[in-house]
Length: 212
Ligand SMILES: [Zn+2]
Image (cartoon, rainbow, N blue to C red; front, side, top):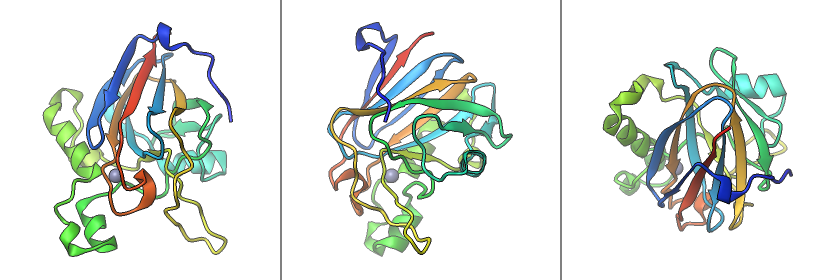
């Protein structure tokens, strides 16, 4: 666990992301941003892209292989599909973030839960809406890859399985990252209602940036 010395009063940008909504924006090299869990137990399904070439994007396998650990926390360097360091986690008072579980989608909701869940709002739908509403970032459907579920607790069991466990985040917990390259940040504030990743009650999060 590592807390931050940055003061909210010095922030250059703040945006509350409502439950089930998305955020897309660019963080410049050297800038630090915080994702703040305002009410607690909320998953933030996040993708990262090189702001100058969206085909370079966050890679879960490169990140896990290089740090030899499946969990993300302070000190984790987030790597791209070209094995470049995109971002680094510099503060974390939640302590557990998942990059194995993937994002919720129409398909996974119907397979995991019930056919009648087909029309429920999902993170993948939020990302697709974001890239459709913001063509200026140059992100296409084929660029949607691995993601990080900030604040989500997906422990690996002793026999190697994955479980969606109850969240360990709480109101006011946050994770902070410094950008090692100009990076597009695309966050779906998860609308999932079928598993405990949001405590069955999606709530807002806040995105905060400090210029270098
Ligand atoms: Zn989701």
